[in-house]
Length: 358
Image 1 (cartoon, rainbow, N blue to C red):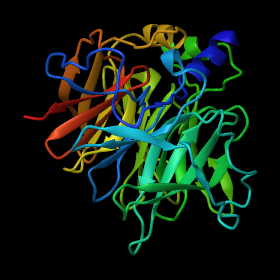
Image 2 (tube, helix red, strand yellow):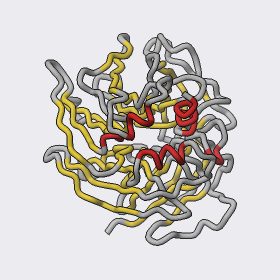
Image 3 (cartoon, one colour):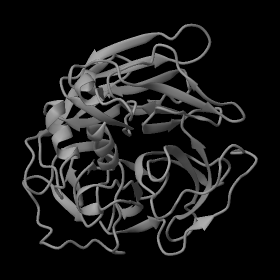
C-alpha cells in the first residue's frame, strides 16, 4: 500500500514559481537537446490551437513539493509562466454541464497530470481537460480564451472519478464528453508488480454530459496511460504502458474491437502530430526502474527514453528519436511537434526539452 500511495503522489504535480524560465544552474544544451528551464515535472504538453502557445502540466514529487500547476509556455521565445492556480485564479462554475461537480479543487493541493484540449466552436473559448490528483481524483475542466496577447484560463467544472481509480490521461470526444484512462487501483499494493509483469491493472472510462462515467468494455490493460480519440470519434487510441504496447479500440455501437501493436518500450503519452500520426513517448527502461524514480526524492529522473510515430491507419510504429538519458533530462513522457521543433516533457525534472526535426 505504501509503495502505491507514494507512487501515486509522485506521479502527480509540480509548480514553477517564476514567471520566466529560470533555473538554479546554467540552462545549457545537452547533445541535440535544448531546454526551457524552470517549469517542474511537465508530464504532458498540448498546443493551444492556432497559436504558438503550449500548455504544460505539472506533477508533484522531487523538488516540486506536494502540489503543482499548469504552465503557459511560449514555443517562440522559450519563456514560461504559471497559468493556474497562479496569484489570481478565476473560478466560474458551469453548474448546468457539470452538475455533479462538488466545487472547485483545493488550490493548495492542485496537482496536474495528463491534459488535453477541445478547440472552441465558432470562435468561442477552447476547453482544457486536466487530470488532477490534488485533494481528489478528478478531471478538472477549464475555459481557455486565446484571443488576447496571452491565453486566459477559467475553471468551470469537474468530474470526480469513480472509486478505486487513478486517472492518468484524458481526451475529448466529439459529443462533448471525454475518455480517461485509469492506470491502477491506488489501494492495491500489488499494482506495481502487476505492471512490471504486464498484467491488467486499469481500464478506460467515458464521461458523457448528464450521464457520468461508464467503463468501456474490453479496455483492460497494464497501466493504461496516454489516450487520444480519432477526429470522427470512432476510434480510441491507448498507451498500454505495462504491456509496452499501443492499442486501438473501436468506439460506438456493438462490441468493442481491439487491436494491439507491440512497441518495445513503456509508452506513456500520445499526442497528434501535424501529419495525422500519433507521437508516442515513453521510457526505455524496466518498469521497476521507473517506479524507483517515482518513489525517490530526485529532482530529475535521467533514464533512457524514446519517441515513436504511430501510423494509426496502418497500425505501424516507426522510431523518431531514442535517447540514453543524461544528467539534465530523462524519463520523457510526451512529444509535441510544433512546426519544425519537437518539445518533450518528463514526469520528473526542472525543464522541457526541445530539438529541431530533420
